Length: 381
Image (cartoon, rainbow, N blue to C red; front, side, top):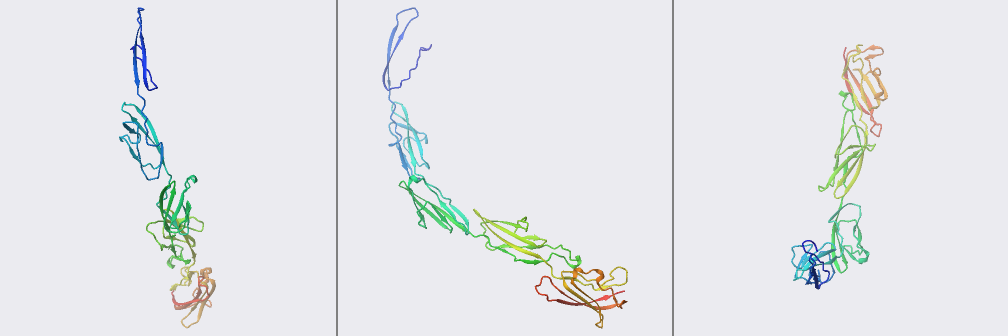
């Protein structure tokens, strides 16, 4: 007993308990005795439900009915007064505290086992030509039974390569559930790209046929789908990325490859390529006059050009007499001194009009057919 003349006794069993207390005095007087009887109420036999555990199918609910008390408090729902209806998505233990008419409390629990299920995605998008395995498997101990519609397969998984809605019915532990998934087969992009072509990158005669021109390679997706996002990747012969738009501006020949990716839930891609051969049709500039007066300015009837092979040129006077002629395999091999200086047999010819005829072939054409052109020019002194 402490200085307050109080003491605490823990009683672990129900029923009557008698306690005797003896009091003594400091002066040696005779001690006195007293007794007290305490009745301990038994703890209530609380039951969370009629059974300790039960099974339910996924998506179903069960009413838990406690007993053994006059009021109850559920851990999962403190506002509930007595019974509660539960619909767990997974197996769960529910705890309840019951109070009897004496105010004594006790706790019990019930285990609610939820039969396992599985989920499927709502939508799967594939590229044409692809296959996918869909489904899921439950524990082999459950002995689940499967049926797929519309295929009638009886397996946990099926392979799919066509568009459609696929539904599986599953029977497991006397529970049934269905899951469905829509499979969409998406077309790969169909690229309409210019066919292999020959392009010239040289400017006009005024710029002396300098290589300064650019050209566009354009592409079109003929089966364009607005629900997709398209990625364009142009690469050159060295597999370097040189463009990311539908069209590509180029300034030289080569083998250009376009990869197009249509982005849905997955990526569907296609590739195409175009070979650009860098060739120009014959390009020839012929002056309208020249001044052969030995001042080092315009002293030759100089014809310049590119890409003309088997080149021939003849110059005639007004009476049809051949004044000068040139023959060469390639016009680009000619230098200024190869052209007419305005003399015939060592003598300067008179001023006036003269006629020229040129013949040449193209390196692009598959035949050796020559082109012939005629014109006139003036000698001025």
